[in-house]
Length: 360
Image (cartoon, rainbow, N blue to C red):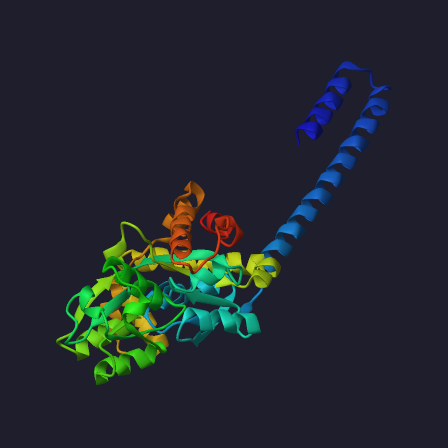
């Protein structure tokens, strides 16, 4: 614009200062140059507009994602809020939600190709460290795991020699190990019974085991059904030395081939987190209950199971090193517990840049 303005100004100046016969000769070249510049500028503007339109159209291209979750508030709070409030729709995303019992099973389904994106609790993160999956978003810091004693188990020390149910490879195993360590014991000091999450509830209520390690809402169900039960430990029992994280993950192959899709999902997810963490527990519990087909009141009772982070907090934490440090502490505990062989750079399996970008 400045170039065209100067060209026109120069032409006017020459016309004013020259005789009538010379004016046409001076003005014509300048007008041609201005016309050419204007045509070039117009072509560039049209090109830029077209590029912007193509970019917007590509960003809004509808996609359907197969999402793996566990049937509890902690797993669904952010994605349920994002769906209910229209944030997924804003990103052109339709969700096909599929329920699973635990994180390792979700990762196996992702590896088979039946699931695109999955949610995992604390225990399954060791599989991410070992290269089976990549974390693209931190969900929350959990307090939903618990070790519960039946009528004959009132203290951690009472676990010795008792039959204790747990789910290997999950956060259930992690909190059981932490509890035993705190009491000066190992798995060899108890009768450890490995079973799935639903089996643990049944075994505890029927008296088939003396104690168990499980997560919400199963822990809430057990405490409700067995009045004599005692919560021996939860995640906050070990807050000085450990951190229990929940995350959203994809396979390394999916991460490499679908960065834009992951970013779009994360943007919607973060908006859902901002909404749900802003004292919208009742609305979020209803959205979760609608998905799980469970009682809304029982879902609402699970709202105390974690420190519910906002998307803004996660994005800023990814930028300032806080989130990376969470995963580093987690990995150090896996190594100390023999679940991970050697240290791996957090950036190798945690997509911090995605979290930062999604918060912009």
